[in-house]
Image 1 (cartoon, helix red, strand yellow):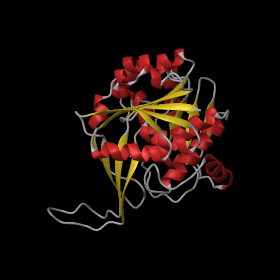
Image 2: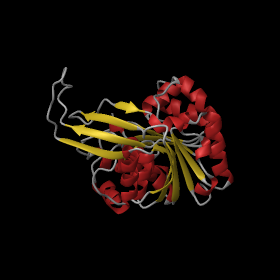
Image 3: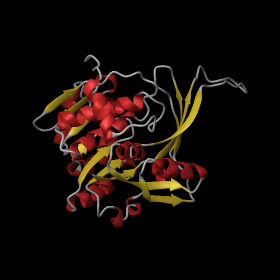
Image 4: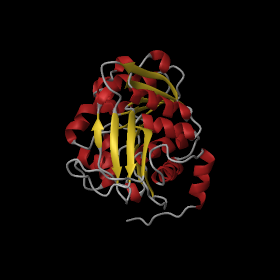
Length: 311
C-alpha cells in the first residue's frame, strides 16, 4: 500500500495531570507534557506507517520550530514528508490538549498553515505512484477543489478516502458535497453523521451519505466501536476493551487501520476490526504516536482482547 495523506497536519501538545485551569497568575504541576504529530492527514499518516504502509504526507506547514518538530516526528515513524510545503506566511497548525482522567479533553487550536492549503499545493509527482489517496479535512479545500483532487486520483486508478475534521453541520455537508461521488471510503464519527444528515438513527444517516455519492461510510462511535454501511451492507463492530489514557487521535488511528485492512484484502468487517484495534492502541497511551506497535502486534491484540458490550 502506497498511501498519500493529504490535508490537515497538526502538532499536538498534550498535558496529563490537569486538575483545573489556574486562575490569574497561578501555576500547577502536571504529570506529563509531550508532543505528537496529529491531524486528519498527519495522524493517519503516522499510524498507517506503523502498520506497514508506504506513506507520503502532503500539505502545508510553517517554516517555524513547530514545523521542524512535526517533520521530525513524522519522519521518525517512516513517513515520507517530501510532499509537505513550508510557508513563511503562517505558523504550523498546533493544538494544546489538557487530558482529563477519563481520556477526553477540551482543546485550544490554531489553524495556522492548514488554512493556507490549496489544491495547487498537491503536485502531480506526489500522486503518480500512490495506490490510495486519503484526504483529511476536505473543508479546507472546498467541495469543488476536493472533487477535482479525488477525481485526479480515480483517473489514475487510485482508491480514495475522506475524513472531515469539522463538526457535523448540514451547511458543511453542502460545502463538500461535490467530493462525495469520488469518495470510496467516507470516515466520519457518529456526531458528524447525525449533524450532516439530521438523522437520529445512525444507519439511516450513513445510508443518506451513501445516497449522496460515497461508496462506503465507516463511522466511528467511540466506546461503541464502528459501523460500516454501503448500498447493500451494514456491519456493526464492537470496540475493544483497553485502559483509556487519551482519546485524541483515535479517529485517525481507526482510519489508518481500516484502510490498511482494505489494502490487505480484508472484508469490511475485518477492516473495521483492525481499525478499532488500532484505535485501542492509541487510546491506551498519550498522543497519536503513543507506544510502539506493528501490524502484527495489532492483529495479535485483536485476536485476544475482550470486546466492550454493545450499548
